[in-house]
Length: 618
Picture 1: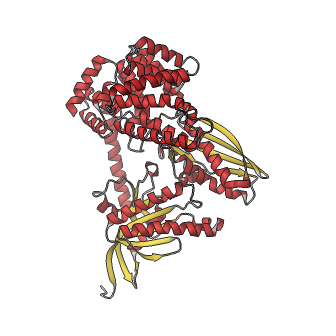
Picture 2: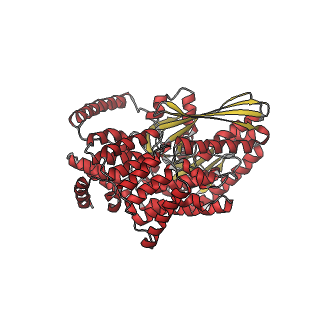
Picture 3: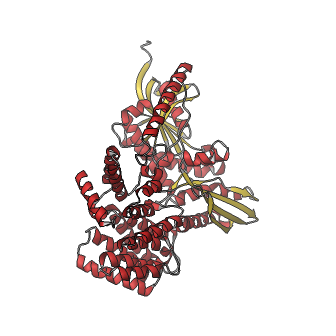
């Protein structure tokens, strides 16, 4: 070996801007200014994690780290900071980055690092998704036992002359993807085929002899109650060159606005690009990427005015679930982008996710998109029915009330029903500082809510809270359920009404309402309605129907703790002890609490046996 060559093992970090030249063509000064802001964020993090820049190339940065863990943590924090920056309405040019990290042999030449270690880091950066991070196996082996991050194995990849084993760091479950792997040789290919044939024989045997063991958890996709929305490239006609600026920025504005709703995920634009090119089929969108909803937008211009058509398709239901349109004026393009994105977000929140039209009534006069988003996030947090959900919803409600007062569109009468639910849950979870006083408050809230606004949401609140906390009895509760469903049936009046019928012993009616509630929504946020129907089926002894209902949902990362605990008992009864223990372990991690579960099932005989089993698992 030539002693004059300065070789060493180093961790190389490569960052590059996505579509930098296109940004420069549109607005050079703004792009340079925004890149400078991103560069400051990176330099601050490099200093924090002891990274040092050894080369730059306009829109690229190459840095060396003393530790693989440091490099990965720096990359994750950088991408998170850039995401927050891009979500801000103050950011006029939203830059995205790809990151590649490798550990390997490099040569130090006049202060610059060269060699395969650097080349592979650059290839990993090219392989990475926008807003993503790809790392080599050498980095993965060091960081996986020392971090709590989630990784996706991409297998052996070949980019140009470099061949390497790559992994994605999943900053978000929607980043999970499948890439073709590179075979080493014909011989290794034959070995793989032989192994695959053997595996298929074993798999068929397992399926044949174990097809009665209940649902199997899917590992091909990260399943969640949060729908994955794919925003397709906008179709345009009649736009001049200046107006195309509006079109180019609209997609990013839509992504930014829709991403603010915690109940949805927005998938990377690379997937829609591949779908448009015919590289990905509709079947692939569902099976490989878990796409639930597709947003199509068409803009047709005539002078300074344009007609924007919005269409959302549910792949699960194979039908258009939302069609809307709006006229916009190009005189103020940024305002037009914001107005259109606001409308799309409102449509998704109130109509697609069916998150409760009653939130429209919580504010006097005009409501801001931020207020609607906060109200829906409050509702989703409360419906998790956990201590963490209660604490989060309480914080959101306090902030929501304060914001409404600041905006001058707060009216206490509109918040009666909201405060009733919040106080009710605080009493149930024993979080109330003064139970007797809070009981008086709940009684006042529910009755004043009905008096001020006799509507489905207030009747159903009085029915459920009255039955579970105020000793109003079944007759009064069912009367309110019928009033709630007399004029306008909603998801809440059906779902909550189902629980009331279940508590009052009418199990068939409870199942009927729970089924109807689930059919009414395109997306079952937090699996709330699915969980309710499963409980009512269990009360009635319809165990097989529960398995049919859940299917591959049993692998969902956000399955509620009560449902997981119920699955644990069901698997135990079938003799599947391994599955049973896994489900209960997941229930505990998700926040399982016995007091909550005791209110989950209404068949008291079955409940006693289930609780005895769950107590033994603690």
